[in-house]
Image (cartoon, rainbow, N blue to C red; front, top):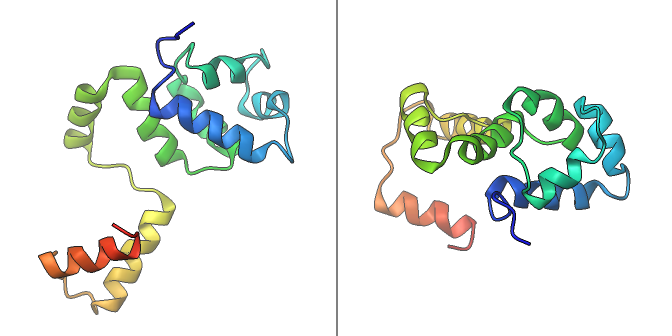
Length: 132
């Protein structure tokens, strides 16, 4: 049976993250930490049967031990669709994760705060770091 959000990036992330934490936390423990009354909520989210409630992003991110900005980006797309999520992103700016802030700080330090332009050469070098 296919659920409406089964193939969403948010549901995929939930499945992966819960699996990764499985050696330390049960789904029920994650649900309790996130403030869900029903521990079965984690199964519903993983399966893509329901959307991640946006008001639970901070507590769910803590329970999943992930960055709340990252989880919000995934959940927002699931909640309102790609087009609306892009519009929100355009209006309010891209939510930046703690890891991304680290990259930005390193870029600023390495460039001595010179505001370097992203050239084809620098883009190629950056992509090479990730094997692209």
